[in-house]
Amino acid sequence: MALRVYNTLTGEKELFIPLTPGKAGMYVCGVTVYDYCHIGHARAYISFDIIYRYLKYAGYDVTYIRNYTDIDDKIIRRANEESTDYRTVADRYIRAFDEDMERLSIKKATFEPKATDHISGIIEIIEALIAKDHAYVSEGDVYYAVETFPDYLKLSGRNLEEMQAGARVEVGDKKRHLMDFALWKGSKPGEPWWTSPWGNGRPGWHIECSAMSMAFLGKTFDIHGGGKDLVFPHHENEIAQSEAANGCQFVRYWLHNGFVNINAEKMSKSLGNFFTIREVLKKFDPETLRFFILSAHYRSPIDFSDQNLDEAQSALERIYSCLAALNEVLAATPAANPTGPGETLSHAGQELREKADQFRPRFVEAMDDDFNSAQALGIIFETVRAANRFLAGMKQATPSVLTLCADVHSLIAEAGSVLGLFNDIPERWLKGIKTAKAGQIDISPDEIEQLIVERTGARSSKNFKRSDEIRDLLLEKGIQLLDSAQGTTWNVK
RNA sequence: GGCGCGUUAUCCAAGAGGCUAGGAGCCGGUCUGCAAAACCGUUAACGUCGGUUCGAAUCCGACACGCGCCUCCA
Image (cartoon, rainbow, N blue to C red; front, side, top):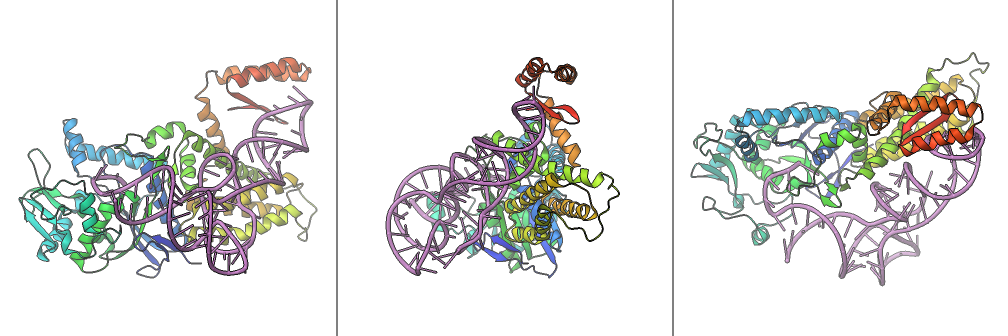
């Protein structure tokens, strides 16, 4: 059992060896709080949520940092549009972010610092960079001189000359090199500011992550994560700042999640093709969204569509139904049975026993392989199928049957605790899915119930013409009838 | 233009030299008055052209197509 992670820095899957045995330090770039989060954010934080959960599951003592960027051009612009201050805007969207994360069962990080609480740390790093001639003051701004850092662009594998050739950045006379980036921005009238050795101003975007990660995790730490779009320039600049200031390696493993696409195009604010988490959760259950995201590997692009979410929901229903069925067996008082301890399981039972025994090693193997959640789900489904097959042929809830059912149930739940799935009571979740859909139809549950009573009457008097009429009528309205020995229930199609 | 990634059956999606991934669907079965639902079973694939190898979805090369980054982005 050995965890391997794909490191953007080397372009390879590497054995994960933490700086301090048994511990893991992890920093993930948080959001800039100027608007509601979209599905792309959901993916990033769900991806790192399972990485965090799995590291803990694997026995590491994890310190996880996820920041809020609460000072930035966009926040200021938004505040100006609303004739309010930046703090009001930032606090509102921090709250919104927290709500969204909670609904998606994304665990709180160990620390969730705000950039504005780390201004002094930011200033210290900038001073160190200036002292070492890696940064220079220019008209109240401070810039990082990229040419002074030979390793610049080692993460994204580019070189400065080519970047300049294709650059779309405007050359400002304040900068010595057009790739130089701001560490500190002198404040313009009406902007929030903090005092600094270079006059009143505010930090540039990249420096805050260097300051916050260092404050909580030290000069060198294990894992730094974020979306693929942060590789350049954000993470590249973080490396330049931190390694130049500290004179040592910044991060050992760089992990980047893939994008959420809409029709094979990146979902982004600038393209305008995004859905907020809140919008999507009006239509789909949070676990369905999580399941959908985990059904692909975290580094691959994933295409967001209603159809794909629908499929995720049916798949999740399959697992929840199996858990519900296992619960039913476990809840039933075992009949006084004559079978002694020497009883043997059916053939299907032995197969399920085998699946159960292999479950944990296979799950760990999948997750050890760069957090392969899609494969982990496959293992769960194989177990579900074996369990269903076993339950279908089960005659009596003997002690060994109950043990088997309990084992399978707890193994699936254990995997669920790492994946952040199956948090609900199966019966309640399944019912919730049904009632959520009921909001989308134009017939009241009372009317449906009435028709079901009429149909049941027709059926018992063998008036199948009328009973089928009712069934078709309801089907037209999107209501599917479910006949069983216990009576008729309904479902929204 | 530079750099990087991808192309797996009808669709979604793992796998990375020989070992049934998985889900949805199709088809068949169990159940049912008949259906539906549920469950069981079954099916099929590795972009193109070359190369390496006893053996290639998997490694190497070329090509085609798609996407991303190079500006704020998760």
